[in-house]
Length: 334
Image 1 (cartoon, rainbow, N blue to C red):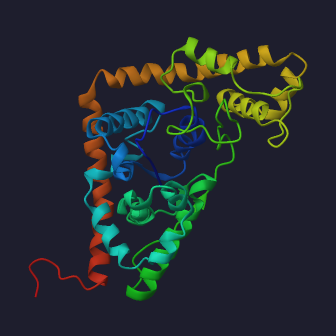
Image 2 (image 1 turned 120 degrees about the horizontal axis):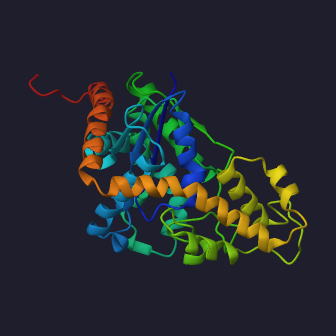
Image 3 (image 1 turned 90 degrees about the horizontal axis):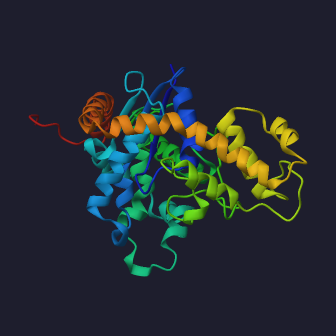
């Protein structure tokens, strides 16, 4: 069976882009693959000025609760918190001794996030892709579902893994990136040329998964469209309308072409209301299940603890093989 690994940072409130862009695919993949899902909290610590310990802890719990509420099944999949396994940090050091400074410096995300920050940039931000490499390769994942903005990190993981295998022997499985097409890019409601983001979207541009119906309706009523009146899917010419069509398709499961034909000619107002109504209905079971889990934090903690145990059963032997391949002395041996 194909093994899949994917992770998400607890860097803000889960939003509609997380649900339609990632989580619906995570849930669907459980039917045909061995799935390992991770709350990557170590990745959320790379900006010292923004790192608040209490907030990180709270967001970690909220993100894990959201994953469970959306349908990640802890019986069929492994769900755990990254920092609960020291193997991730230890494997990162091994890969640090294989990765090149130049290839990390050229990573687009580092260049973007470090711009204008001078000497205040943390080593953690620079080293982020190596930790991500450890996250993936520790579990011998065959596939990693990612958006286009993360594809280069998977390519780097393959390069580092291949270099390790060539130098020290075959230890790591080289994964391939898979890019789900349906609903994979939910855009900002106020700036539909960029992704909906926990960190960059304005309050009006982001639909949080726990927003109440009135708030959701208000956000869609004010969603940016254009000065025309036709409803059709064209990302270049009509990014706002196209984004709303994709959200509606993701919320209802109906084809975009059918939805465009249904609402074309009726005006943007009724169309926006239809999108809002569909999103409210789509989020209702999620919100109900989230509140059930939120009321029983002990259940969430127990599920994460069991998930960490199952994850360690895969990661620890992989790490041990890597350490032996690199010549590290096992405890109790001379």
